Amino acid sequence: SQQGEEDPQALSIQEGENATMNCSYKTSINNLQWYRQNSGRGLVHLILIRSNEREKHSGRLRVTLDTSKKSSSLLITASRAADTASYFCATDATGGSEKLVFGKGMKLTVNP
Amino acid sequence: GAVVSQHPSWVICKSGTSVKIECRSLDFQATTMFWYRQFPKQSLMLMATSNEGSKATYEQGVEKDKFLINHASLTLSTLTVTSAHPEDSSFYICSATGTGSFEQYFGPGTRLTVT
Image 1 (cartoon, rainbow over the protein chains, first blue to last red):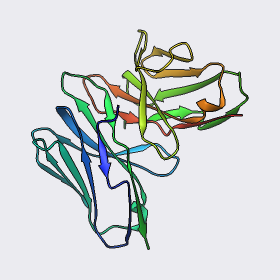
Image 2: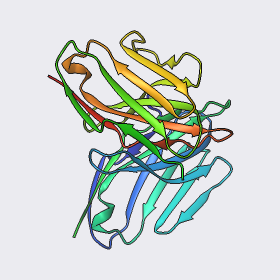
Image 3: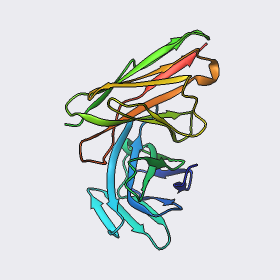
Image 4: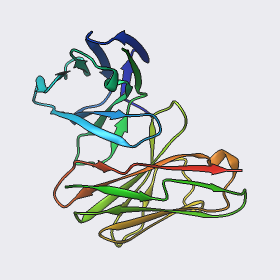
């Protein structure tokens, strides 16, 4: 079953605005990762945040992790039309498992 | 570095035939490879995990006799969809991890359409 669930499922914004996506999960994790997928294409790894980290930045991306609430957020600042894609969070369970559990995904549309 | 390729990128086959999809790690040795399936507008669902030289571990609900996985070398894993049916039409994505790393590198996916 999917333990990562993004909220909201679809978001449409104007270029230049910020986009925030939230993800919740159910079990203890080692890491949480965010991926991007353009329509009909493979996944592109965006950022990984470890369970002992609370915030991480990469360019226009900012990820937060709240392990007490079992939630994470991905903020894309100053969005561009090229950011239009689906975004997924993925978690790996503790215990050394390499398996990732993906959330349902969130479709972001950035209008020029 | 860490490039994973898939072949073919898309395939159309008739119901009842078998289709083989290849997943290759181009610049690293993939000790573990994962196969996912993604239906339109849905998330990725893990089908199976394969380690080089050993049998694949399938997720609950995935038929091992229908989805044959072979991980014969450290750079190649294959997924064969046997006796394909229209409901097998989907986007199949593989990923790979290298020795000592949990980071998964994803292939570009293969679009399978069964008519």
